[in-house]
Image (cartoon, rainbow, N blue to C red; front, side):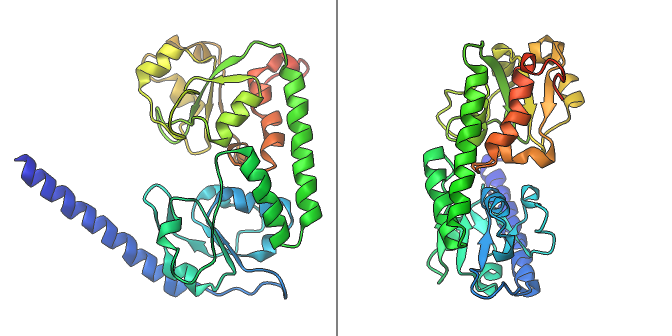
Length: 299
């Protein structure tokens, strides 16, 4: 088979996938139920997990009229919310479904914004790369839902928790950490909540010098870095599967049984949301520095 033929086949396959995606999206749009919100409350479509987390913390899930399909948005109180098909990596979302909901605000990741902007929607790009930006965003979200004081209280609590964690790890050796996102080598670099939380809890991200937020690194790089702790996302492999990988028995984390998976209820540690600091204290801090919890040990 020539390279030209292979290229043509790839184009046909890609076109078929896109057609299938939009067929599903249009069908989903027809099935959308326009839910009511309490009088005077804004109608919000949130396609970013961190926004759903913030609304939950602000006791404002009543403003939500739809969320994305990502499982990380499954917070108590969202069970009956319509789901909007959204693919951040592909930069596509179900615009018809969003329009049918008549939202006052649509919160999206930057990658999804172009597919929704210019359609009469109030699209707000959600910052996901610094705590300073997140801080301003929380205050703005609090203003939108009428919870200004509550938003400030969330940030004050987050700051206090971060200060507490910093003091507890001060002077302790940093622990080499490999974070695995959804597959081998898929990890997080600077500009992500995961990286910030690793650093906060006294860890050293083995790919902390990455030039992109979500790099993919080779197995040789992981083995060469010899992480002392491996942390797996809720959508990654199990600790047993990781420890059984060929050659990984030479990694310190595997040899010492320090391979952990984020509990689903603690997924806020992966999000730019004020609740990330509390979750960091219950997960990363405990896993990186179990000596701080002599009576309990790592969970």
